[in-house]
Length: 473
Image (tube, rainbow, N blue to C red; front, side):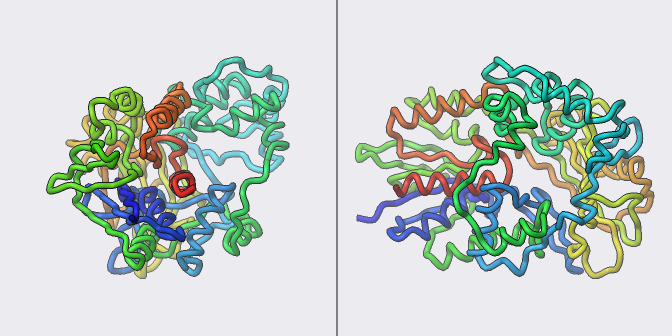
């Protein structure tokens, strides 16, 4: 009899899990259950009548490493090669990244010259931070905050300015609360193995699995820093949906889950708002906390661990200014928390992907990121904050930081509630406890998605593929 696998959550993780299940030689019956009215999760693009594209979630994907190659391989398999918009290594959006400190924009140092001389906002050459790191003793703690780790190895200034900003840009989080072991495992491992992050990164690049494709070879040769898709990032989940429809996968939106129970026959009974589904195995691609409330009472130890994985909300404001110009060109700029807590940064979308500007002539497209770990402090409850408040804050930031005073020709405001999980201190222990519980109880339950092993699109896609491979084996 054919097994049934239910995939709960129709974001990029859930869709990828369905994709790899459907491609397997002895594919099970696959049922995808999504609580909202659309599939794709945080990969969400708005396309206007004049063909401009606005991203409300991730706007570009890095091609580097095993996880980056894996995503490009899937993009190729889906026939999307011609839709890829790369940002090559010599592009201003690859070379120029800025910080907004003390009321001014500062380009981050790059190349040997930038490391040897003092470049504001830093008060001495970054070379000194590198020399300090090479001489620093190995840490003794099983985990450490990112801020503490970088302060100890590279000095407080780099931690306060650059690393604080980086964590706000990547995790919308606080470097003083996030775990270096879970957020930047390569840095943690480099110190543990080589005693130095710099030495470890230079010497420790091991070979990953062979995931080569023409696209990833091109990315390597042209030194892509990131890539997007012509119709926006949502093109990827749309292509996955088309593929799954062709393979007979059952996909249900507005399928809100009420409860997960085990039956006498060792199946899962999935109770929905309007009916129920039975499955031999469940793959959960929903946030850890959302899964916790669905579990039966006997799984309380698992629910407790899942509940301890928090997530932060981000206000995303898309702005387009027709006929305007930027004072600088680059990827965008980040803002350290000491400068402005509730403003995380501004991405210059029209620099990296001018193809998505639309047909109305020259324009500047920007995305202003607000809130994150500081959302409630700056704006109150993410569920009730008026859009006008976020829009006003974003327009003021663009005026103050970039000198653009014109009225935007297009604006979109979204609040992404609990969109980025926060790997705080001890996250590695929580995920370890969760894995052991599933193993000991022999539960036919796989956990994938951003709550566990990486928050990037690449991480989510890779974790889904890995879980399916393990299940099918």
